[in-house]
Image (spheres, rainbow, N blue to C red):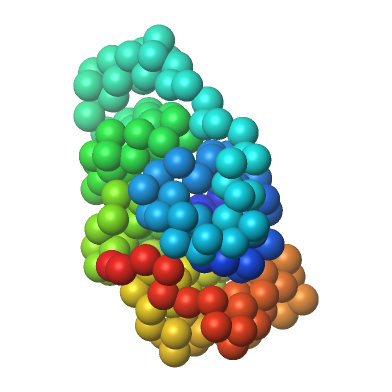
Length: 203
């Protein structure tokens, strides 16, 4: 899969600092409920960063219909199902993305990218525990999947308020790929936690 699987749900200054990079890699705006809640709860100038992000692209209905026709005609077509999931995901229709990711993952059960995208969709639909469980499955598929470890940190530290769990996940990113962009962002997350930005949303 060619997409990055990175969605940060953050509060306060941490949200403002990272949102541009994160949304750039994921190609969507933070209109989903968890992100909006984080920005509102923060009540800081940084939270206004969300309003500066471009809106999500509208769903290409014709393309979705074409892909669905292919998927229905070809029960084992992983690519069509994954692309449908991506299409709905990028248009912020996360609930519609979920069944297509689930179907694709059933056909390709060791694909960590699909698994993590599914986990992110769960996270956006406020299914925090389910998201974490899915991320943990991704790690069994690929123990060095950086985007998964980043998302585990987000879900635990910023959504559940499990600071120790989130910090441990971000430290894993640094351990796996020191000096990488992901490691730099993970370190920013750790630094933000130490600064007191945590537990923006209940999970």
